[in-house]
Image (cartoon, rainbow, N blue to C red; front, side, top):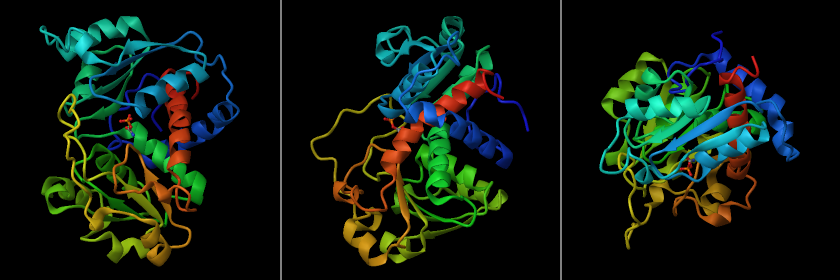
Length: 317
Ligand code: CP
């Protein structure tokens, strides 16, 4: 297995099966620190730089919380508009990263352009963590999600994942790449204009992922062990930011998971993951069902970022 020390976390396409389990093991080792709301000094001499060119609640703050739990320091920007990259100068990724690498020891970047973190990694002497790039990938979220599945179900192998939402979405790409490393099946349910692209299907076929597509959640939910959701009503992820419109639209029933549907058709022990934020595809009365695991997923978001920061900064092998 390759060492994680000094490594960029850009994509799950290149993650090997043993690497997933290694990251999960490190996360499990560090989890008690977060569970007991303690702070340690594992990364006391390290600084995280946050470079978010797109809005975020969870990903940025989970990385920051993780750094605090490990005794490290945090600096950075969360509003690119207030930097030279977001003003009149439109400073390049290359020049920006050549600055940021002197301000800390690891950079976590979210960007509206697919491939921007990979471009940053070309110029950076410190590890770059991709916190979501356009429609590209969201590797730290999906590592969090699979860690949650492992903890809640006890296995990833042998499970059927029902992926519902916009298949252009970065989480859908990362989870699909990740599941090629497990003995898992995937059923995708998406609106026709948000379905898997022919190019992405070709990639999945080359990786030997077992998957099917369906038109309505109600037709396939009985097969699912893990119900993995994203909104179909959502902003354009290739834009830096979109203001809310008066009428965002409603989610068709095909892509919604309701209490009633769960009671009528879901497996008794199926779990629901949603990286959030949500729209009406997942009504809040589902939160109190035994299927909901998205708050555990949110907690695990801090644990997973602790593991990744400790690994890429060489504090854990
Ligand atoms: N899940 C996720 O990426 O949330 P944020 O956009 O709030 O970071």
